Length: 372
Image (cartoon, rainbow, N blue to C red):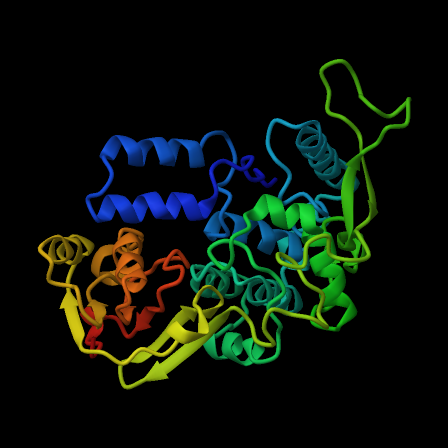
């Protein structure tokens, strides 16, 4: 049962601008809180394409959500209708058979690969470089970063959703959403279609989108009940090719996540959010052991130069792998000022590194003897 995203607030780029201004000391904490409140203003997932929305995409493309249910806003008739339909679907299957559509039947090698294809084709969260591996392991399947890298060489990038572009997930939904995306991927052979889902065999149902059924006898089950839902074919063409494109006209011929290897080990980078001119950085390293140490160095005026920020001891065994979001405003500001900057860390940023190149999840991590 996905939550769906909140309705759009202030544009994500404006939110990022205020955060950068705050990092520079140019706006007050009150200004920052006002912008954050305008961004995260209601129930639902945040509107940028981070981990939460990547999760919703992933569950749908693996056949674990009702078709088209990932990105419907909360507190709408359609969201309520989908929730009611999902509960009804579960109860019917439970009554028919206690073993109907158990996870062991639905989560297979093929659905894991479908999930990875979805992640790459949308430039989703780097957190899924570990989440998908863990999901696969729980199902008795070995999935490696090499598998991700191999697929990324051939799976095209079909979306531009912030931080990979200026649009948010509501714009993606309006452009055609998951139905259009999955029809394109199924039609081009990038998704396994011979899979079991919670609504039956194959992915054809997932190439449709939900609508409220306006037949007089089907609008409402009762005065307090959910609206009935029907599914209709998704648009033949993308309704906004600045946000969502067909397979034959991708934003990139490669996927949005890439595997990096070298003398430090291996790491993941979200290339879909990084402009080509910023994808290669050669600069001296500056080593830090915390986000706050880097922020303090910036405040003292010590970072006005080309450099690669190396944050060690941020991995799962060292500190439980905290999110390193506080790095983004500082590093993005320095990049905007013309400095060549990048990040290398054994921690995580979930793709929130945005336009700054960031090699994350570096393994082996520092506390395990990693060279970092």
